[in-house]
Image (cartoon, rainbow, N blue to C red; front, side, top):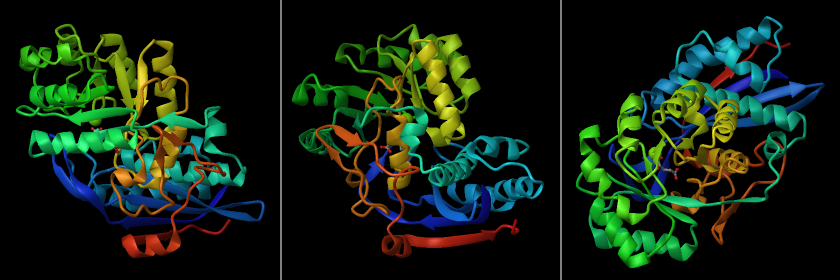
Length: 378
Ligand code: OSB
Ligand code: MG
């Protein structure tokens, strides 16, 4: 394909309810969308990507303004230079065209994602078909933030269970762990339940975390720091709850190391965090070959990222429900037609590429910044 134009569109979307984790409270999300205009054989399409970097560098070293600057100043120019040198531009070549930039996987993933969507649209091919996914729907879990009281938490969880969510994930931190889990188990019984600490504990907290063992949780997600693979392996020997890694899995290599060390018996795959959907697929394949369960994580995506994640979650190794909830979990108004959760599942969109695009009026309303980069003509 020939890339004609790349736009970096920053949008601002209020959350329907504050979302508190061990690292921050968010009341709004500012996703960065990448829009690529691409052509081949006289046909022009638009491809969309979404950068998962949060506003602050609190979940990962990447953050919104840094990712936008990285794309504007280094990644998009590198891809356009690659194109000007006569090299082929496809989702598969974006990593090579930007390999001289160290790190910045979330920014790279967003660019690769937009090229992937454009390429599939030029081929008139659905992303799910491209992956070889045959399911039409995937189970939908929901991530529930830290609340200011147990009654508030129970009302949130009760609402999501009434809506039909297939699995509940509770955010935990020191001082908000055993009691909320106990309260949810006492009120709602044997529902599929897991917890996410977002790195809030230390290995010396193992005796405390062992007190979660009786609650029969599906997993505990990222209890220790991002760099602590070895300590996660030690923790896994001291608690019965399966250890799942999120923040630590920054690449296919990190996933391979974690599996080899026994640091994770489950992996949360977030395409943005690992550098894109191609790397996400490789981690899925690696985990499946090693008998490690995976599930698809979320980053409060708009309908664009949500659509792509839902298709990915259709791969056979995704044996646990993902954080692929309906748009209304976070947003009263999504930028695309809303993703709808019904009867505990979300549907993989139809249509070429990721099968979704922003609603023009909504996008205009929520856009707070736009950077336009034109390519040389071919
Ligand atoms: O740790 O999984 C996480 C959101 C932002 C950053 C990190 C995480 C999360 C979530 C929300 O848990 C998942 C979602 O989008 O539903
Ligand atoms: Mg997590």
